Length: 389
Ligand code: VNL
Image 1 (cartoon, helix red, strand yellow):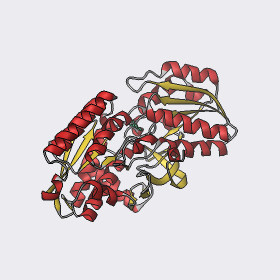
Image 2: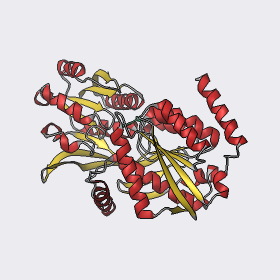
Image 3: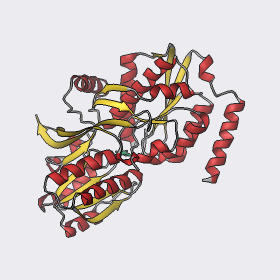
Image 4: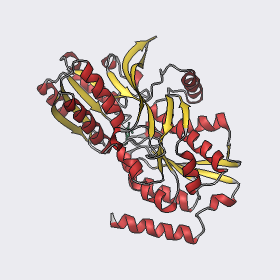
C-alpha cells in the first residue's frame, strides 16, 4: 500500500513537471486510453468491449468536442499491476484525456489512485463491485453493480416460494457483494441461507462446492461468477446431476452471459437470472445495436459490450459539452447524463457517479434454436443498493 502511494506520488511529480496536466487543452487531438483484458482468462470481456468501442467510433465518427479523437487500447491480461502501469503510461506519455475499460475489480481498484492524482476521468465499463466508484472522485461507471443484480433477484426469489438457499460466488470483490446483498435480502424476507460457498477467481474447480450444494438440499442455488465462467459451471452442474436433483439454479446474468449462452445447452434453459442487459431486450435502440454489432464483429454482444458502447457515448457527449477540455470540466459533463442505452434508459447519478438503470428479471428460453435471456419483470430505475450505507 505504501509502495503504491509512493509510486503514484512519483508519477504525479513527473506528470506535473513535464506539463502533462492540461496537455489536451492545447492539442487538436484528444486521446482516450482504454485498458482491457485482451488475453488471459477475461479475454472475452476485452473482445466484447473493444468490438463495441470500434462500433461506436464507426457509427459516430472520430470527432468530439471539436477535436479529433484517438482511441488507444492496451492489454493488461487482467493483471492489476499491469493495468496500473499501462494507465500510468497512458496518462504520462500519451497524455490521454480519459481512461476507460477495466475488466475486473482489482484492475479498477489498482488504477483509481492514478485517476485521482492526475485528475483524469476514469470510465469503468465492466468491473462491478459497488465500492469502485468510491475509490476515486474521478471514477464514473457504465456497467452495473452486483448489489443491483443480487437484490433484484432476491426479491423475485421471495415472491416465488424460494425459502432455503445456498450461495456460490467467485472469491473476490464482486462475489462478496453478490453474496452479501443476496443473503441479506433473503434473510430480511424471512428466508434461510444454508451455506455460503466460494470458488477462486483463477481456474475454479466447481466439483467440490457442487457436492456441498447437493448435500445441503436447498430450494435454490444462487450463483455469481464473472463473465467467461458460466459455460464451464453449467457443464459441471449438469454432469453432477444437480439439474435433475430438484435444486433450482438462479444467478446473476453474468452466469447466463450472452457471449457464451448458446454453447451452454439445455441445462441453462429455464434459469431465472437478474441483470441490466440482454441481447434480446425488446427495443428499437437495442435491435439496431445488436444488428450492427453482429454485422461488425460476427458474434452476439453481451453486457460488457453495452458497458463499453455506453462508456464511449458518455465520453463523447462530455467532450462535446466541455468543448474538448479534460480534467474537472470533462468529469462534470459526465455527471448527470441521461440517455437511451441498448439496455433501456440510464442515468449517471451526479452524486455517486454510478449508473442508475432498470434491473430485469429474465428466464433463459430457446427460440429458433438459440438461447436467449428473455426479460419478464424489472425493478425500475434502480440505484446501487451498495451506496445506501
Ligand atoms: C467483474 C464483475 C467482472 C462482473 C466480471 O466479468 C463480471 C468484476 C469479467 O468486477 O471483476 O461479470
